[in-house]
Length: 356
Ligand SMILES: *Cc1c(COP(=O)(O)O)cnc(C)c1O
Image (cartoon, rainbow, N blue to C red):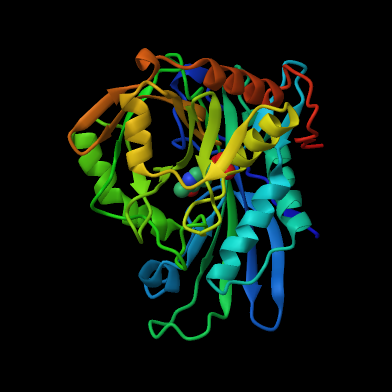
């Protein structure tokens, strides 16, 4: 793929105080754009100065939410190398999302090449501290002036990047989550397995209600039987019950297949540590909590890596897990994954990809 690069003549100052970066608030000097037109395919791959996109008020995406996205990070190692974590997995997942919405594929190697090219152009923006990163947000939407939603003839693929602070500036503090028994996030046959804006829109109300009750996220139940736990807000969920790491199976298609989740399972299996992917009912979880067999619970995803759950609530029952502190396995997985990502420990799984 040929990428035309037009550099900004008006660079912004790179934030120097990495403790105030936050997440997804500041953006770099450039962005990647590419268009798809019927009969032509993807064309005009380009890196241009970061700025507003011009969009027609009748554009499909604004009305019918034909939008999907990805999320990954670029990490700076102590030696100054910049690296990505399994970017090909993001490329594949974006195409699986695209297929669900009848959107055209983006060749996997082009996706990865675009990510690398943009990170390279803005490499000075990759922060230095352990735990900090350049968050990469590829997204892709239907952009056609047509309220009748005829066959889409024009799509746009964009990548923006954002220097982000350490998720755990204040340490790995366990979060409080509650099992949501009213709204559902996804159903079998629906869009749960895709990373699409619409899934987030549908999750907003339950998230707001949970926050109002002092919980940071909800744990979703399956949309059919409303019995089995699926995932948390923007993370997959894992539990340690009776010494075994268990996580909901993604076979039904209503759970987002996280790359962090997949990596944890692969790593546990490589190390011979018992783990299971299966259905886990809310009742089984509460019973395990009641009888002290729920040893650990943690969310996992690119942003937080591992987010320990200290409190779990369902209806009127509230349990503290592992004394409200991070568990041994959660801590070990956090140290291992972040160690590989920031280049502090050897990448024996072959997951890390240099930007250049
Ligand atoms: C992105 C995402 C995850 C985590 O996926 P990773 O690839 O590990 O970052 C989990 N659940 C939802 C709903 C997500 O959007």
